[in-house]
Every structure is written in C-alpha cells, then in structure tokens.
Image (cartoon, rainbow, N blue to C red; front, side):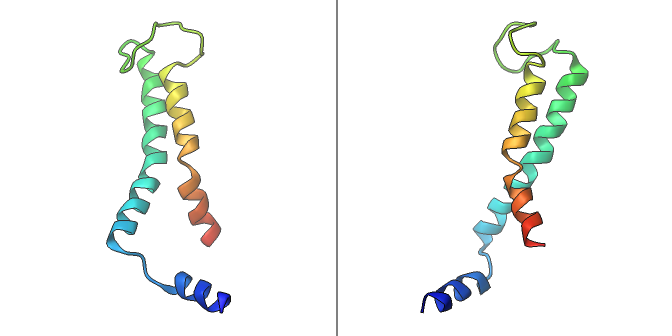
Length: 83
C-alpha cells in the first residue's frame, strides 16, 4: 500500500501555488548572481545595507549576494536531478 501512495503523490500535477513557488525559487539564484556582479562593478560606493567600506569581509555586499545565490541554488539542483 505504501508504494501505491507514493506513486499517486508523484503522479499528481502541481497546483497553481506550487508552480508560483517553484518559479520564485528558480528566479532567486540568477537574481542574486546578477546582484553580486553589479555590486562588484559598483566598487562598493553605494551600499544598500549598513556597514563600513573596507570591512572585515573581502567583497562586502558582493560576497553576501554570491552566498545567497549559492544558498538558493537548491531549486536548480532539484530540477537538474529530475532530468
């Protein structure tokens, strides 16, 4: 009976809300990557968050956006695993 339940849950189509959530999760990684590149190009002159220029971490905002991009890459990895 367990195999029937798991097969049925895998065969069902995603609801509207699930599709929106998946699309937002997929959009996060490239968005944060672009923001990291824009922060690198900006040279840190206009910081969006608090902090001092030349702080402890090299890269400041660019590093934060790169880490956020890495953290949100899970949606892309799940999608690649389905292929």
